[in-house]
Length: 78
Image (cartoon, rainbow, N blue to C red; front, side, top):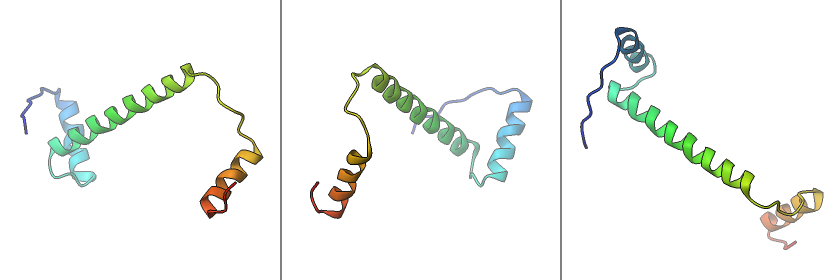
């Protein structure tokens, strides 16, 4: 694992230290890694949403569509 050093103003360091102790993280590095992973997830989701918004419209979703999904889940065709 690589190492990265960051500088924080005292107020942010205090905040990180509080999060570590209050939320059960072992170290500040664990807390920062989780923040980065969450940011990666948000960026992936944003990309998917933008791709979906730019795509051509699909077929209408109505009661028949949901009933066919239920039938597939039940294994009865549809």
